[in-house]
Amino acid sequence: MKHEGLRRHARGVTLIEVLVTMVIVAIGLLGLAGLQVRGLSIQKDAHGRAIATQLALDLADRMRSNAPAVAAGDYDFTVAYPTGTYAAPLAPDCESNACTPAQQAQYDLNRWFERLRGGALPGAWARIERVPGQPVWEITMMWVETGFRAKAVADSQKGNSNLLNALGQGRQCPNGTPGEVECIRIRVRP
Image (tube, rainbow, N blue to C red; front, side):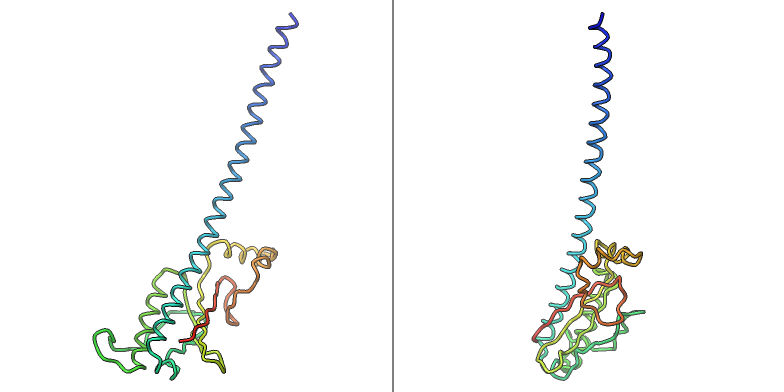
């Protein structure tokens, strides 16, 4: 008789063990899902930086092919982060027509800003300026971050600045650029 009562009690214990195991597995799966989401967010940030770098190097190549316009400062563009859109000055089609170096520079900037503002980077903008006293140009790429860094900025605005400080605060943005804007600076010698 005693033996049969122990069996019934053991069956209940097994059910509880199975339920506890299911809870532990569910928590583990939620943790893995969180890691996956965070990894995708960080990958999105890295993709934005790669596109910004590619665009900056494209402009550097355009500048290298038009040295007289670079020397004249025709590639300078120092408008602050936009509140509107880039209004492209008229320039002839330099692919079909012969252009002066200044016209070629304006054509290059128009085409380049079309690409920049074309949607690959949300809220994209750029500054192009010569580093004083050096034969070096600095291209500052700016865009609205939508991945991991955007969450850090949102957290810092709520008072939790630890994550943003851990990211380095080294945004390299010009003064007056909003906090949600990511920036990188690339120096080139055209």
